Amino acid sequence: MSAILIVEQVLNGLQFGVMLFLMAAGLTLIFGVMGLINLAHGSLYMVGAFVAATVAGLTGSFLLALAAAMAAAAMAGAVIEMTVIRRLYHTDHLDQVLATFALILIFSEGTRAIFGSFPLYLDAPALLSGPVTLPLGIEYPRYRLALIAAGLLVALGLWLLIAKTRIGIQIRAGKNDREMIAALGVDIRTLYTFVFALGAALAGLAGALVGAIQSVQVGMGEPVLILAFVVIVIGGIGSIKGAFVGALIVGLTDTLGGIFLPEFFKLFMEPASATQIGASLSSMAIYLLMAAVLIWRPTGLYGVRA
Amino acid sequence: MVNAALVAALVGVPLWAHVAGEPFTITLATRAVIFALAAVGLNLALGLGGLVSLGHAVFFGIGGYAMGILAFHAQNYLPMFPETLAIEGTKSMPVIWLVAVIASALAALVIGLLSLRTAGVYFIMITLAFGQMFYYFTISWSAYGGEDGLSIWVRNGFPGLNTLDPIQFYGLCFTLLCGALWLSHRIARSPFGLMLNAARQVPHRVETVGLDGQRAKLVVFVISGAITGLAGALFADLNRFVSPTMFSWHMSGEIMIFVILGGVARLFGPVAGAVLFVAMEHVLGDLSDYWHIYLGALLLGIVLFARGGVVGLLAGRAKSHD
Figure 1 (cartoon, each protein chain N blue to C red):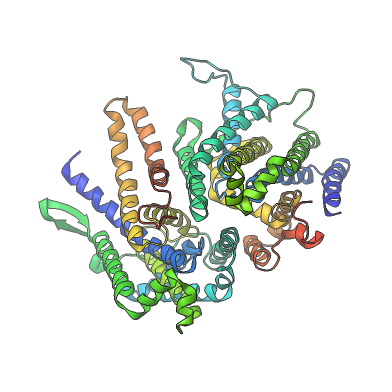
Figure 2: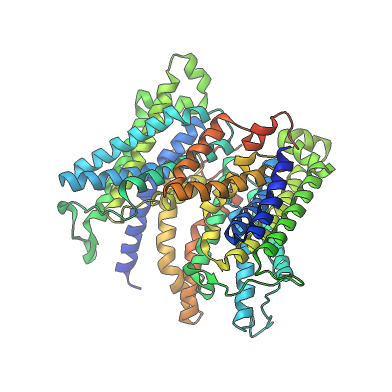
């Protein structure tokens, strides 16, 4: 177990974490402002990946593909917000779960009907392909490093948007007291559509970025969606800061657990069963972590105490 | 009326199929009845306890694996825990059912104890996470097939019956469903059920009167999990196959769909929902490969426009219990 391997795995964990943050930020924003759980968020991630793969295939431009992915996901988000989601704000969580589960079925099967069941592939741009040499002589894929940077930039931009701009003030006010800001003359319906489309665009961006290191296929959004739920539950639902911290914790736990748990069990067990137990435990690690956090703080790390 | 028609169909259609020699129809009906049993279990937690559990596939899967593991050891003549206990596997349904019920009740007790510390969205998320935990655990558990699952060669036996005959196996499943319906009817009408109703609607008042609403919710969650676990064991026996997909969150979502399609907190709601789902799966599945689109559209329609589900639409929504 060398230092190089550890650094590499930490970077992998960070990369996974910031991508989870892009998903979790939208989910937690939508829940915080509108009080809605959106299971269909993973479908917007999938939309982003499919549009990016298609546009990149047609034009050969990765940047254009990213822009198209964000625009398409934002549009899909705005459309479902105006047709379906809007009717769910005042219903209970059960109805929200079911209606957005129905949206998943429609999105997944619709995508399968259009693109077929075979995965698409999206290549990382030539500029970002190949390894980069970090200090200490560590070689690391340039694209993954770019993902970390992109994720951190988006996190910074989101923080600036929420903390420094007028629309950010409205979003924060909407979290605290929606009747009051409506009374003050803010068009709450447009604000809700904007927040939903913003969350959708972030999901679409994540889908497009990850699409270049994984295959683009139907159902790709769901594992990520569930991890993003774990992230926002750990961080505290509604808190962007919680989503950021939670995403990094989950990304690192999942990546490092897969490497180190089997090694850890090998210290005092025979290798075959140590690998077995380590693999089982590491696949469950983040859920165990989430259960532990909820037992310790039932509303998450940065959640508002009920 | 709706209920009587439903029971008549569940008795009549398989009997007709038996006489007409259409075993596939009986298998479809068996599938519907088993799903209905799982949904009756969830309906206790969801309708009566107000617990939106998006993790009931855990109990369905535990029931399935209880059957899979016991039958696997029996068919391979391998005892379990060879060094210490050396328990033989079994091919006997009553024993398997008992193990499935106890195992899923224990799991429900632990999951319920942890999850009930939270409420609302957090409860939905934590039950979902427990589901995923079991899902990934079974995928990596290579001793029992891992991702490929376990195949059982011959359906398990029930004393005095030939379970390989579709109509006899259907009869068993139907009897169990009737038992579960009777049980949930009794629970809903009992003082315990009334207290749960109250705890769901006005939790503070129940506490003020000196009743422990949280404990009642835990108890109903355990009963609910046990019934869904029993359905899992039957489902595994129907397919003679168990795999991690029984634990997947799509399964949890589907069990919830059965309840909602039919109507939450209605005694026969889950039965109507499961029958409708299997019928749609069969009819629409023949028409189009993409039948989930229609299922999704129907579900959206019910959530947005027909809150009481199918039974609510047909029987009117005034009564909260049939």
